[in-house]
Image (cartoon, rainbow, N blue to C red):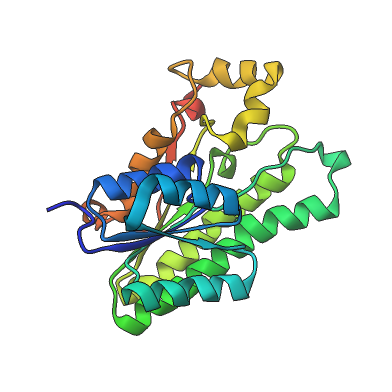
Amino acid sequence: MSRFAEKVAIVSGGAQGIGKAIVCGLLQEGVQAVVIADWQPEALAAVQAELGERVFTVPTDVSCQQDVAQLVAQTLERYGHIDLLFNNAGICRYNLFLEENEQNWETTFNVNVKGMFLLGQAVARAMVERGTRGAIVNTASIACELVSATTAAYAASKGAVMQLTRVMALELAQHGIRVNAFGPGSTRTDMTAQSRANPKRKAMFMSKLVDQRYGEPDEIAAVALFLASDEASFINGALYYVDGGYRVQ
């Protein structure tokens, strides 16, 4: 019996990067079904073709309440229940503080914070209505604690994610729903490609990484899967950093 047998999971931002690694990990662990929500139709089509019938893809803008409602409704119509949510969709755009603009700030918060709130609330309501003792795992960042230049919007949004996670955990515990977060360090994904291509930023990160390397998506996903599993039944409202020792340097 696998950790996720008979479970139905939603993974937002699940068509690539850490989200896709979470999806693949769930499938390897025998999950009943994974619903992948992502705003990129081409990426969704590719992951559907690659992973087959055990995944169901739904084009979703997590910052749009109507899209989120349709995602949850389609999942319930197809499978009847939702046991796990990986609230993973997120963006990062780099701008110096003095050059930051309102549009980028709002877009970052709409996806990283509003989207997490909307999807978390919609799934939690479905769990409560059906008496499901589920688990929600939010994707945070080492930026919850550490900052670097050009990341004002991103760092502020991820700080909000951590506080949102704590409030969700506090209020949903009475319904048997656990809520935790994991904070990746610099990971080899498309989202970090710009940062990794910058020699100065790369040198800064490497100077603080104990293993002198970037994390791989499956290494990060392993922690997310643990937090969603029954092995983490006594963990609630926590943030687990997965950063290659970045914070100890």
